Length: 357
Image (cartoon, rainbow, N blue to C red; front, side, top):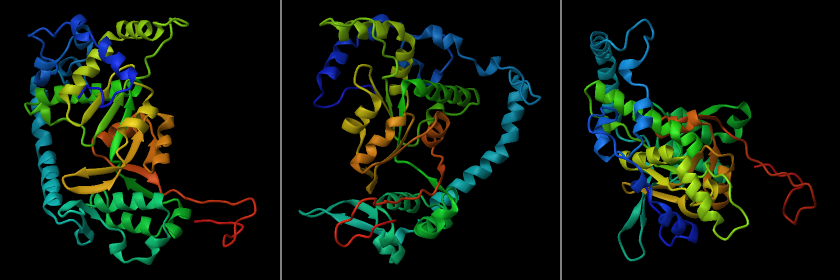
């Protein structure tokens, strides 16, 4: 959704007053076929929509004319077998009991009941886990929770448990973050890709509303700021008005995306810088999804995403392709990181001169 936050700071209040975009934006014409599944909720960026490439106007690719209905039907028939095999594979995975269901532990409330369940690492009864740094334990919990022997396997879990021996070998592991953080520079192409996939689903005769991010996505609009007015008491308001005028179509498109896609939150312009908003408002520390508790973790398309590590939330800066893949439920391939502390000065009693975890 496109909203402010509870107990908003003055910048959020100023943004709310300036959000007069619906008065200046014009709705899409009823005859528009693009993004048909949600066109009734689309807001005006009709010139942008009309300039989007349509599947029917694409040039021939891989020796096939995609604009031909005959060729398109042939592609659908040819892909049916592949889709059926994929659906059977996913149905088998969904029906299979979780590999680590035995360590699923309840977290009770003091007054009775439970907060939820979590995958308990000590319940594995493996002494190697006690030696793992806490940052590596977050990776281990994620691998255990997402282990389906398809995208994440038991062998991947074993690599992380044996971190002390496997990390020097630079082994790769899959990682599924709890959420994805975007800003409007890389976020607009990601939303455009989702919109194009919905358009393709509609043309193939399937339900376009099936196209949604599979993990929570937070998109903070902060990379469009320009300072035209300074040393004036109304400088902030004047600059924001100019920002809305310059980016009318982009903001309208992102506002449409915030209502069209599930699992997507768009933080409006003027709310703050993305990594600071991530620290103060978006970081959850602990997720509770369908009664399963797990640590917050994030990949973001901003180099300052790692600031969230100060709150105990594992965070990495990644490129737009990696972020978009994570949005669609794909694991991020990463080298199992090392973790160490080197003491160069005199240590307190009980500590060694050189300490490596």
